[in-house]
Image 1: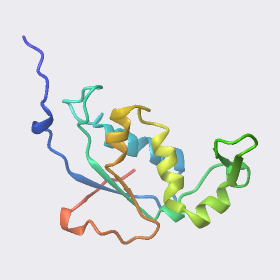
Image 2 (image 1 turned 120 degrees about the horizontal axis):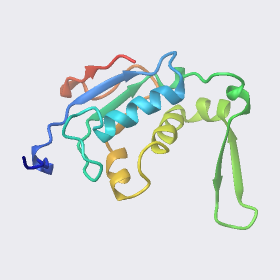
Image 3 (image 1 turned 180 degrees about the vertical axis):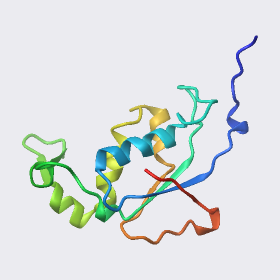
Length: 142
């Protein structure tokens, strides 16, 4: 038997909807990363983007376990000496609730050009409204 290799043109993508309300951040991000990469499909290949589009709503209602809500800190650096900036989780969730999920999912996909291509299919919204109704997203249960 010959091994089949799916071409980029033959990949069928669909829009999947995840509701983040009362979901643990890490478990939600792991599920989203799996769907984005296409690991749930039988034609998955690690060097190819065969994943679906993922829409996450209610990003502002995601939860963390343990003391992480008060202890988790996000870091970034300006590039200058002493230029490290830190943002606590509570402040990040209040100001940029989408960014919390985007950072968690980005950490679970490859950090290369393929990962850059995959992360563009992630759409995160703070409320329960999203502009993708025309694509008829399929609700996925966690």
